[in-house]
Every structure is written in structure tokens, then in C-alpha cells.
Image 1 (cartoon, rainbow, N blue to C red):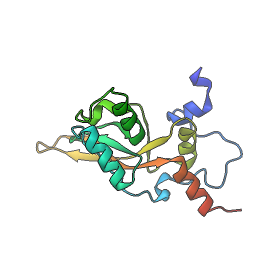
Image 2: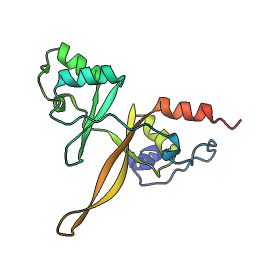
Image 3: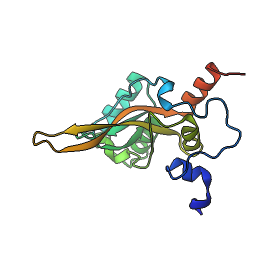
Image 4: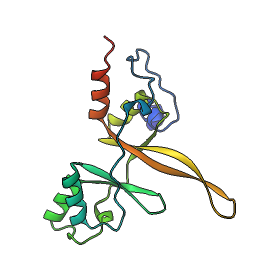
Length: 165
């Protein structure tokens, strides 16, 4: 059951990490990874245009974010290409037809330990930052801004470059 799985509990924010012998980097914040700003696609981008953009810019994946800022999911180059080649989608279809809507989010203030737990099961995590926005009538709401996309390779690169042996 998930509630007795410490990694699931940590990943979903129900438990602070319980690892007894933590590596030196475990409690360092995600913001220390110095991630570059992500490439973001709007939902109306066609599959063909998404493939072209990802290839041209050298990205494997990109978040799909609505104009409102709502994070709709993640599109990957390999899934888009294979879906088009298999005939499941057309080049002209919007990228939302090949968007993964299940993804993990992590904040800039979260630990690399929490990120490590997420990356044990997921290929990436979307790094988000909460921002308060106010409308003209003075009402406010929290909006999540996509700050970056982080992979196991990003974590490994950070750890190997800064290894404290």
C-alpha cells in the first residue's frame, strides 16, 4: 500500500525524508541546480511545429502551458514522433493530443533528496514556483510558474561536479 511506502510519502509531500544515511547533497535545495529557463509550448502548437521546435532548439521535452499559466503536461520528442509515425495523430493535430498529463512537480525550495525520490520513478520533474497574482478588482490567487524541467542527468551532473569526497 502507498501509505507505508516512504518514497511515495516523500514524493507526495506527506513525509519529510527519512533516509538515515543521507548523501551530502540530500538537503540542498533544487534552486542550486541552476536550471536554464525551459522551452514552453502553447496548447495550439501543432505536432509538426512541436517536432521542428524541439529538434531545432535541441530539447527532448517541453512543458505545455496554457495562456492562463495552467500546466497541461509535458510533450516529448520521441512520443510525438512515434505517435505521428504510427498514425495515431496527424502532423496538423494540436500538441495536446500527445501531451503527458501525469507528471511530478517540485518547488525551488524542495530538497534534492525529494527530487531523487521522484526521479526514481519518473524521467523528469517540472520545477514550479508559486506566485501570487492580483486581478483588477483586488482579488488574488496563486499561480504556478514553470521554472524549469529537471532530469536525473541534471541531478547526476550537479552531484558529480560538486562531489564532496
